[in-house]
Image (cartoon, rainbow, N blue to C red):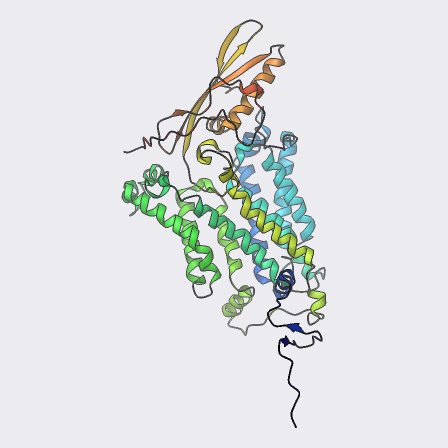
Length: 481
């Protein structure tokens, strides 16, 4: 007896009644939804959640212990604002202390997995509020904390090892694989763009700015005397650039993953020792980079440590029904948009004329970690037309030392300072023009004028690119040459 042959050009899949011609692919979004919906162990996300919460507690504790509440947030007379966020104002000193305490308590709740979504929402709002108060407080690792909090809010990192799970508020200990991918993408973006930011001649050929910083650590045992050698700075700069560019592919590949993670730990411990100003960033990156391992790696490590048989995550009762575990297509699409924004945002500087390291236009939010060393000095020439009187001020009466150092090297902050000077004079009934004499040194170059001194900055609005910023000097004039 001859069985009927399957018509050529069609395929069948188990349980599917419909047939699909060969060469006709499924819709790309449907494929992504199916792969993103695949349930996996939530243990690795739990580790990321716990580490993130502990880091949040540490951030709050350091902010209070170091006196930053008054020095950075509540103390200054005038704050430099982000474009579009001038409406964000600092609370009183007491209110700022309360805000930082809320951040610490919410972070502790995130680590414990108690009221996870509510705690993360409170943390994200409070932390973003604190960081939007003043541009001068911007740090790459605080930007990462903000983004990672938003990512954790979107994924079920409380699926296991949380008080919510213990009390039955979570139905399953598994998470969709798309949640793991989103966390990996957010971590990977930091490394890739930090590597791209290092691909310039100062970093690769001149060893700058590392060449300026390393001699301050000449007192270190064994390696100290070597750190003053220029070739050491160049070699370390190349190593750092290659690490940033290659570590993500190495973490994605199973065979190289353990070695790549050891490199992650070594790299961040070294940077933490040499550059303590980066604070909690190394610890957060070490912890979150573990998301590249298999989702169940914490259970396997725990089983190995107890010398007990490995037990997989308990499946939910309806896990076999893929329809209940399937993510909505809109959720997957939003995740793709989020990743796309993270890829595009650091590249916006390429669309703005000039060197972002000099102009600072498009420089923030681009993961330019430890890529430049700038110093500057600025004074303002204030002219009152009514009395034809001109005087000089350096605006140190308006700003703290930290704010002034940041302002003296960045044209946009100089513009904001000029506006504030004009407002201060307007309170005394004087309409004035404010021009700036500003000189900046980039990576050891001779200090050069950065702002057109003929422009009344008090009349200049915010623009993505300001034409009154002078170009970076072409002649290197580098330190030590």
